[in-house]
Length: 252
Image (cartoon, rainbow, N blue to C red; front, side, top):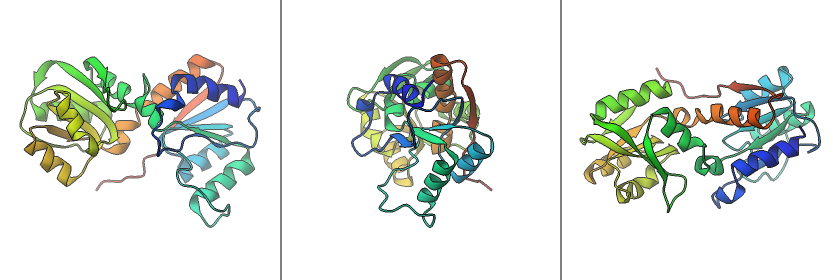
């Protein structure tokens, strides 16, 4: 399959119309759109390690969630770390496409993947902010028990939580969901599950009667890499795919 054909197929699953206005995603790096895709590396972030791994192991395409290029570049030289990656990728003939907020919002994307992993039922899309999801547990459980379940299902090394309500109806937003407290409350959720908020977020949420669970930006979004891989293989089962673990955050 040609690179651009694969991009168009994936864009049908994750429409560009779902991208936030401030976002920058799509085709990040490609000398040619007509080259064949045979070997795809899937990663949450296009880190230097991911670029090096792709080049050394003969991958022709990288597909990521977070954009390789987020801010406009006013030059191309190896003194800048983003531009250095672009130079290395272009010289090696490796192409990159990224699907960011549209993958958050799309059916089967970041937040649907989270809901599926946690076994939530009756999942609906937030009609005001289509990135968010609301789902329910079959049976209500203690907040500490659900937080521990989240930690295990996401393989997160640590989970922060606050609140004192039983958990039944959960507003889910992977990554940074600190701005969606009022949306969670307005949709009747008792718990906000996100990747990262802030100290103030946790204090304010509890004051407003909402539990909050922070399971890590990486750990709430990385599961979508498996969904990306499944979609690529459904489009073309002959493509070789591999998932690269790109987490740079360490705990001691």
